[in-house]
Length: 171
Image (cartoon, rainbow, N blue to C red; front, top):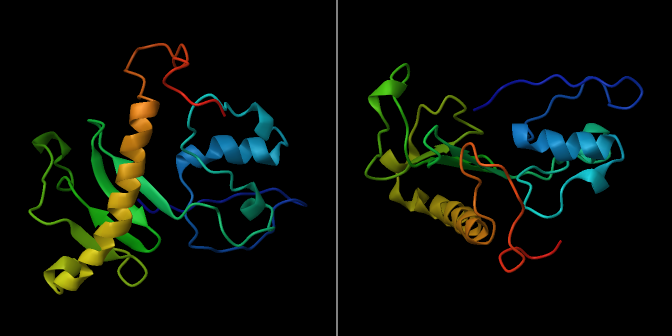
């Protein structure tokens, strides 16, 4: 998903900056903590999916520290991976037909968002050499799956009581 954002902080956040840098909703916790000089209050006993983009917000860096994002469906399963300017779609729904279920294409769909932000031209349809785009996706997916073994997701409605000492590494 690509959505605009407006961030204002007169005297702190540079005005008039337009960027294509990636930032996700999960980045707000570490970023706001960084802006408030409270990064030490962000939990260290579990993985935090967000990245601290406070240096980017303050104009100290041209990058947000995020170069990828994994998008999950309402069922908790992976839908797509965005890596830099590339997007790989593993499952999707037709617009306005979420209730009809998910469509899993035979081959993942590949898009170059730098030249095709509307995702009109599936690169897999034109050239199978674009399969190299699977490499960074599979690396990200593997890292995520490995982290789930060490830090399992909390089930819906379950209170987080911490990770077992034998399961989690200390930060």
